[in-house]
Amino acid sequence: MISISREQFERLVHKALSDIPPDIRLSIQNVDIVVDNVASMNQIAGTGIENEMELLGLYEGIPITERYGYDMVLPDKITLFQKPIEAICDNQEQITEEISKTLIHEIAHHFGLDDNHLDQLERY
Ligand SMILES: [Zn+2]
Image (tube, rainbow, N blue to C red; front, side, top):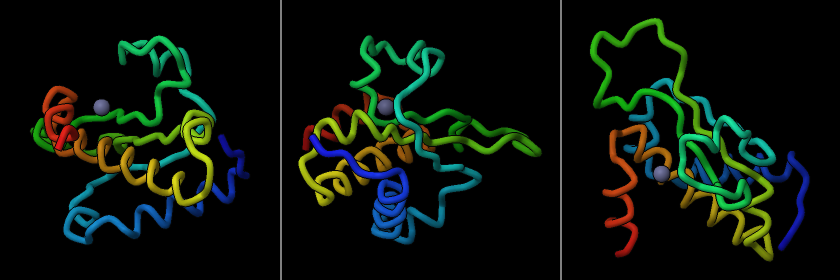
């Protein structure tokens, strides 16, 4: 486990984001990416997860595959949870790696993939 400042963590988020292939990065539409310590009770409620320390990231919004007449709507939100990510990492490189994995997972939700599909994909 490692503990870094929020500022450092956010720097690693930017790094992870800039490492995402441009094609994918540029097709992300109207998504806020934010950092929080841990998920709130409300955020955990819909996930089926019992321990807030098990939730590394969360996508909240309307996947682009489901946007019909999508206009003037609040942006989607991807939240990265700093404490649970720190808890499974020993250095900054691992943190960057976990952030990337989590970001890509949540971005996939934005593109309309659900967790069942992602579970299958992530096994490879
Ligand atoms: Zn998911």
